[in-house]
Image 1 (cartoon, rainbow, N blue to C red):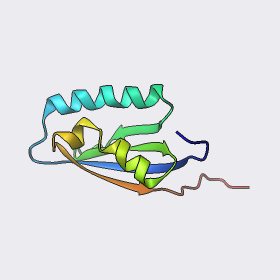
Image 2: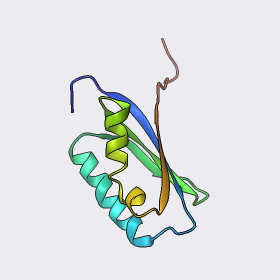
Image 3: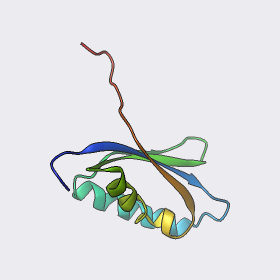
Image 4: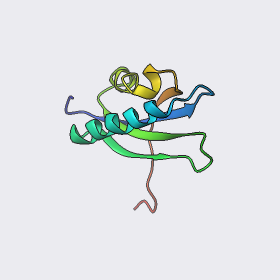
Length: 93
């Protein structure tokens, strides 16, 4: 990963064909992202419809490449979308 990183929000919305095995493999995938310093935060939606994670990457193309390696995407268990996110924390100075 290059020095200049940005944050990308990955939305993972479950498909009707969601596979529990893909969910387990997804957890292993996230652990790898943590080890490489590419994951900022993650979590499921409380309604069970899916979840989201925040990637650190040099570009939208790199973030998309990373997200498309997610077992949720590979198996078709979830529809993944990747968005560059310019977030703000409050309170700002």
